Image (tube, rainbow, N blue to C red):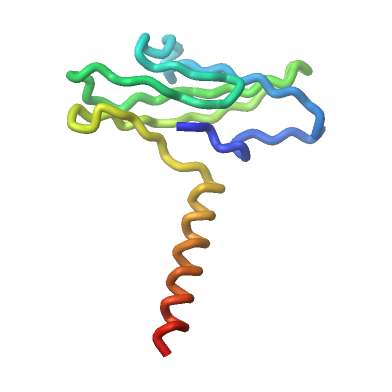
Length: 111
């Protein structure tokens, strides 16, 4: 799962944003779950017996003592062995736009 690029914005276009992540309760991520702060990407393979939701907090720092944070919840289930987070707003809008365009094209094509 990649953190959507529009999750954090800054008023200065050239600001350098650094991302950090931890579980919502302050603990580190489990050993099997990794976060690449340069790409904003979570990756890993859960143990076979892992079957729970995990909530993480992502904090964006700008080097000027400003920070913003958001949380993501992963649903990790035994049968799937993978995790996925809720899609970002931009992803949901793109998906909706594609659905509307496809629906509109099908509607116009049936005339």
